[in-house]
Amino acid sequence: MEIYLGILILIIVIIIIMYNRLIKLNLRCQNALASIDNQLKRRADLIPNLVSVTKGYAEYESKTLIEVINKRNESVIDKANNDKEIHDNLTKLFALSEDYPDLKANEIFKKLQIELTGTEDKIAYARQFYNDSVQYFNSAIMTFPNNLLANIMKYKEKEYFKATEEEKKVVKVSL
Image (cartoon, one colour):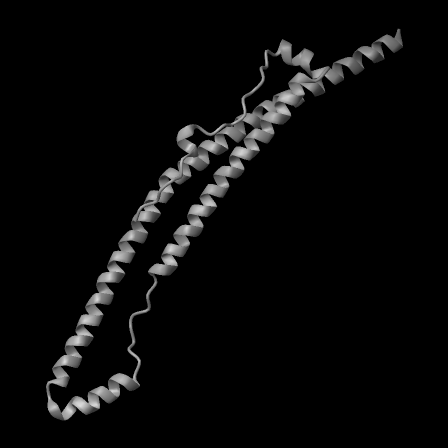
């Protein structure tokens, strides 16, 4: 009698362990899917703003550089009008390198590129994590004896993440 009681307790413990494992795997799939949504939302919020800031800074820097060059050219032309100063100005012009403003737009473009790459990598990782979670879940509900409990719990096989045709197209970032 004690052996039967021990076997019954062992069966109950095994069922509880299997049940908890299936619940955890199901929750992991839900969490992984939410992570994809989170990363896509991050991309939708972040990238247009970064592109806008980068574009605005590049335009500002371009205007500033043109203004500085025009002012320096005007100054050189005004000074060169005096015959006495032509020689001195030419000597200074060739001897001194002009101090243009420190241009930063290229650094901002590099940061944008890094952020774009990082964002896409995070999305790819989230998708891969989801597919891995689905693979573990599907394996668990298809194998014996888990499949018996999964049928009772009405768990069905989950679909892997597949990119739509629209998502497979090349993303264009325009500045």
